[in-house]
Every structure is written in structure tokens, then in C-alpha cells.
Length: 89
Image 1 (cartoon, rainbow, N blue to C red):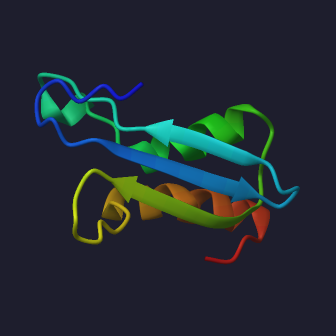
Image 2 (tube, rainbow, N blue to C red):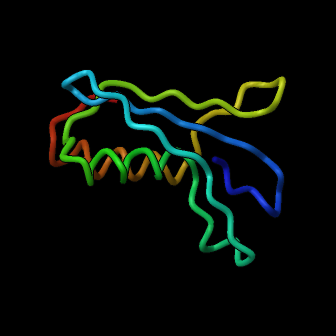
């Protein structure tokens, strides 16, 4: 399920942890865009809440014909996790 009531921009993300488990997320929008959370961060936070600490790769998919790179703020989430887990991005 994607919560994109305002922009109608659907994004999904998957992050693989060092044990090979895949954690997924979708963008969740809010009327106050500051409370909106990107799919990548949902996947990272979900992975962390499920015990993952090391990550190997991330994939992002959107409902567009052009490449959609990960959100810059999501990289900060990866970096914070990587700093404590010795992950390489």
C-alpha cells in the first residue's frame, strides 16, 4: 500500500541486510510535507526495527518512465546506520 494522497507519486524501496533479508517500504505522505517520509527511510527504519544493522544494497522503484534516484535525506539514514554497523554503500 502506498500513501501518496497529495503528490500521487508512488515510490517503493527495498533494502537488503547482511543476512540476505529484504525489508521493504513505501512513501507515506502527509498534508504537512515535513511529516512525509520517503520509501527508502521507511525500509531502513523497518529493517532496524527488525534487528538489521548491516546493509548490502538498496533498490528504489517509482511509477515513472525516468530513473528515480534515492532521496538525499535517505542517504543520511544509511550513513547513520553504516557508521555503527561498518556497512559499505
